[in-house]
Length: 209
Image 1 (cartoon, rainbow, N blue to C red):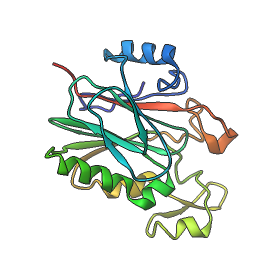
Image 2 (cartoon, rainbow, N blue to C red):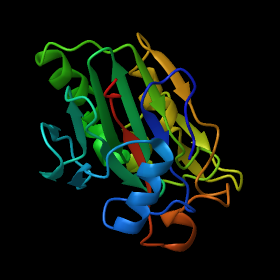
Image 3 (cartoon, helix red, strand yellow):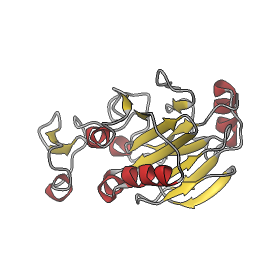
Image 4 (cartoon, rainbow, N blue to C red):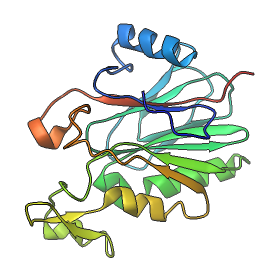
């Protein structure tokens, strides 16, 4: 697991740890490793901008982000190139799944708005491993949605810096960013690399004590 420094309850999994959303053995192993409950709250991710408030574990619905003020309740999203984002404040944690469609739809802004509407304050954010601009080849139509964040892959094709775009929306927070690219790291699942159906998870929680 990748543990961002300075966070009370944030972890990004690798391919080794598995997908704790549906694999209960992997969930148990991850939970014991992190010292958290095995009762997680999770989503059916749809590349949109719907955010849920989680008050108990289990399936939340179709959406791409969740937050909670319940201490000890783990939240999770899963990725294999898209960007996992964890948000943390004194009384709140959140997880967001952001592919280019969700990012363009404003999923991260929707999460921040929902947290603010609940009266909670954010202090920091962690952007986990995702496909980098080195490898995220996109068409002109996608690149046009992210002005200022266009780039080139290592083979010269048009790409975008999706983690950079999301980080720019978090400028008022303390932001930690992973330097791992899912396409090249070798320890992470990447749909762009081999069309895998496997995923790694990001998990956020507020410690009970």
